[in-house]
Length: 452
Ligand code: ZN
Ligand code: MN
Image (cartoon, rainbow, N blue to C red; front, side):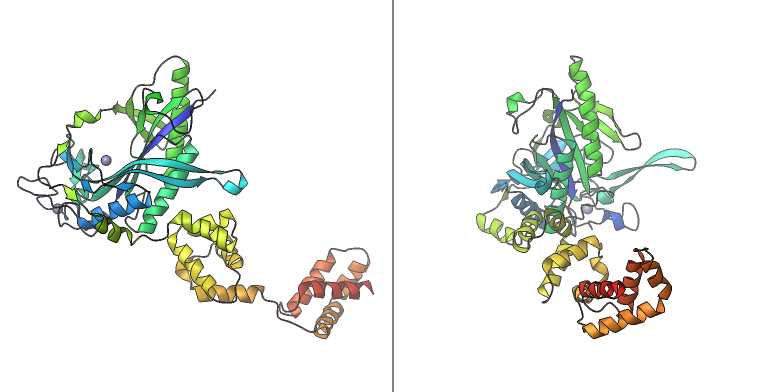
């Protein structure tokens, strides 16, 4: 028997604000001309550097928290999370501990196609907080020597951390959740959320219950251990890591052992997780309020102004496409996956004379690249390909006559019993009519002629 995974997710997302979280340096580590270009005393952790919080980053965190149905705190603060690592020049990360910007939210999303055996799932969001990214270590060989280089262009980039409750029960649910969250982040326009570049980093924490768990598990009934898999950069790898851990823990548990509480890494070549270090507890970080940054105080008006910029969110848009336009789930889900494609679709159907279902199918089935065409062109193509140009019966008959007289051998074959020749002749007639005319009528006339 295989146990059920009890999974919570921690997701780090780099915000694409113009400047960094606590200084005026350019926030664009991926396009910096050289390492350590976008740095200053603050993000290098020099003595005397004083942090000033980035207003836009705070606003975007409030926006994301609201999109996830969180309570937005009217008072919040930044704390120091103390630990040593070479990519962390200050010896601490400015983060948020006990007063995060947003708490107690939820995300509802489809797992599979709910109209075909899939289902809707809700995962509770524990918190959304704001912190800063670290520098980046580069392990290279220089002059024949193995060295580690450090680039601080990323140091101090605004980083949002989203933490879920342990409500996820399978690798597939984790993948579907992450896809839905990724869509929201992209719709809000607050991050590129490019996972290959590490702008969105995924960390599942996993434990296993051998007996069937309930949807929401009481804190006291959770397994007494959990394993965290660090820094995964694809939804599929998260699913695979969860599946792998589920099997590994099940074996240990069935042998009467409790899997050690630890942090593991994901080896994508081998498709396995591996032990990195025993997990540290929160108190090891000696969190305390950052004395350099005053507490954040908001009023409801400010929060309302910020959240007034909320676009229609992807799952709402999908539901609207299904309910108002009668699109099937799968088609609507494909259209809303990118906001650009969904916008393009809506521009197409605003043009009179096309059926929304026809446009949706056209865009989805033909994999139309909306960046390379215009709604007008697409609608024109659809109309040209699907509209029947009326042709008189006489015109049809004369086209049939000329095709039959030009293909005497085929006609003879047909009369000798080779019935499949009919499709060839039919094709020839359509060609002669240049695609015009009602196809059913043409077929009937052709059959009548051949029958004679
Ligand atoms: Zn700086
Ligand atoms: Mn974090």
